[in-house]
Amino acid sequence: MLNLIDDRQISKWHMETDQFGLKKDELWKSPDKFHLLSINCKQGTVWITQTGDEEDHLLESGEVFETLEEGLVVMQSLSDNACVEILRN
Image 1: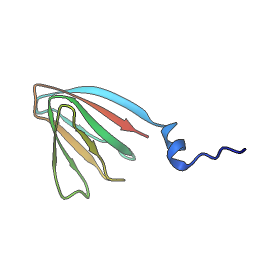
Image 2 (image 1 turned 180 degrees about the vertical axis):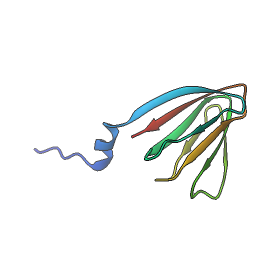
Image 3 (image 1 turned 90 degrees about the horizontal axis):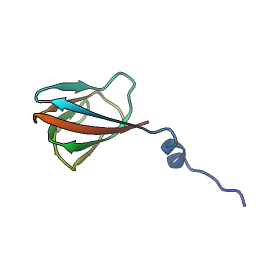
Image 4 (image 1 turned 180 degrees about the horizontal axis):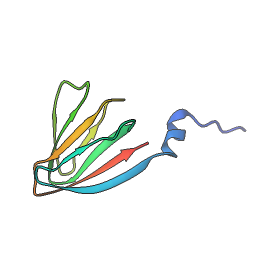
């Protein structure tokens, strides 16, 4: 029997994870043509805003933010030592 793979399974093969720390008030901006999938706050508190999203978001340790399909993302650390993990394709 032929095993067909849907688009969701294929996209999982191309996902990358970045994990990094941010000092208090340090900013991070997504690069051009960067398709974020989710931001996981591993430690501390971060503020996130995204083009096309009318709301800003506060993430605390253990919370995850799912991005829109496209649009610039800016993140700022509100903690002395925040740590985030970004899952992208």
